[in-house]
Length: 326
Ligand code: HPA
Ligand code: ZN
Image (cartoon, rainbow, N blue to C red):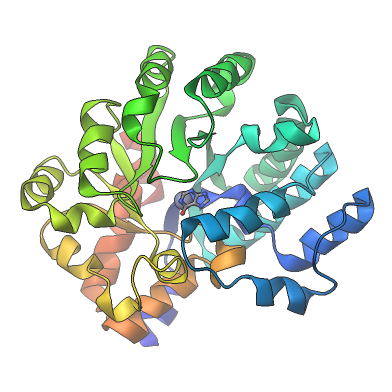
């Protein structure tokens, strides 16, 4: 629609993007062939037909299977390059990308290899068109906290590569309370703190992420709608929520976008941002998420501008850098 066409040319930020979730079917099949990894798909069509999810776990099973084709620095270079090209085309001038190194350990891939590939693509995008990139060291909550702590220490030599830590994967059985030592250790090291909370899990997990983990930003957070006092606190403190509309529909958090409460949250004064989460799996990049808000929820120009401005307000950037980008 017209609002989305107008937004296309506007500089935007994206703050909730899992790099493994940007691995598209053609690249997935290419890398599987390169490394002789057998997948239950014979074509791009078969891959995309499998992306039909009933909940978060049904998605995560295919997400980790897809990420298992990533084996050497060149693979990580191509993966990052593909996403940064989307940033260039969609005018996403600043992005914060979740990297989940624990995902690659079963394949014997170490963090140094991952970062070698990512660094090369990021350096090219920075010098090529001035792309701004932050990396978020994101941990897998279905694994023990001790594993996360081991990865946090393994990342110490690469501390300057990351702006923040995050917490992803299966939410419901793995509450924020399990990761208090991890977040305390990360804070000591000077990382910014964010965590997925209130996607499939309850509003109380958002409270716990704020109180127990001391996060300053919440990934998803849509279940805050169930807790009026929490909504007031989130609005008063301008705690950003990185909302992912197409993801929420594809993972059945909402039956359809028309039931999404994103504009209620925005109008209540919360710092709501729009993001794509796992664009290869959920049917759209950042601009397609805005387009869906326009077509399904009648997003106005004023709402669109607030969402875009919030993306820069919520970024893990020094405030002078935010002014330069906004
Ligand atoms: N939720 C939790 N973990 C994830 C997601 C998500 O939406 N995407 C990738 N890992
Ligand atoms: Zn996510």
